[in-house]
Image (cartoon, rainbow, N blue to C red; front, side, top):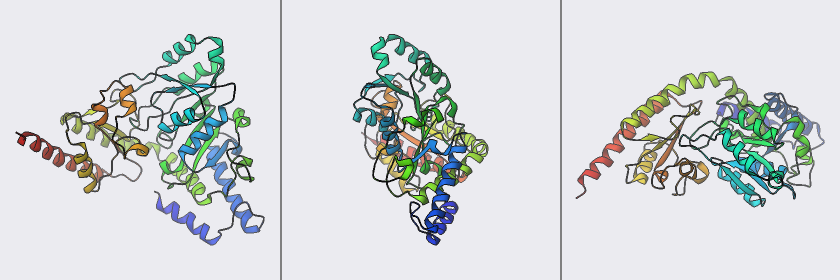
Length: 372
């Protein structure tokens, strides 16, 4: 987290803890602060403040966005095969039939596959589509999807085009003008947990359906006292991340390239290596390692935190659905670790990671050779 921002905003909350929804002068000051935060985020996408609706987590935002586009008449949707599990669950829980777009071996979704799928549908089936949603950058592989080309196909068919931009925001430019609605999450920006958002194109604001009733918050669409600290952190951290995108890319991209060259020299493959990816993400497949838990725990003991994929499922040992969709075997899809970096990651962190991997991989190799 960006502790300087978090601590500064916490100090303001400590000085004035009033509920933004109250009628006191103190409450009105905090409401004005919340309004400025919303306006700040909306302005990054040339949108009015009412286009931004805050909630608590990316999963909640996902469910809410799906709710906004699901109707009794629209009972199906199209998703990429690299969507976050929350998107799939939200569609299933809203009773939507899901049509999946395939991934190629590099993790890409191809516009021609969307065109072919729509062409294969009869008018009734196509008319039942609530939306098409394609994640901007995979939260596992970091592969960036061609949203602009996909959105043109969706719009020519008159189908809303949505996207999960949680992983890409603050790292690369968001092609916001091609989307009807998209998702953001503050904690991916360093704001700490507690605030995510749906962002709607101005023409789509009328699509917003209330999630909770009983209060006037979020234009009467999500009742409940606002998390002012998390919201203000979100807005301030977004400013910093957007202003530092070029610096982060120039600094982190060569470090990841060096890491990947080392991994490849050790017989490790990189998922999506031939695709355009987020510069801060390396998804490594250790096909020949027999004791992945040893490797993961060994890194953890050295103070290196990595993931077996999406953080939401990294405590479970199961094949990566995204890797399976890319054509990897079930065995290989169990052997992946994701290494990601951010604004505060240093070159020394990469040096420490490579040293730790060198030691642990050598120990695993010795153990393998010593086996009768």
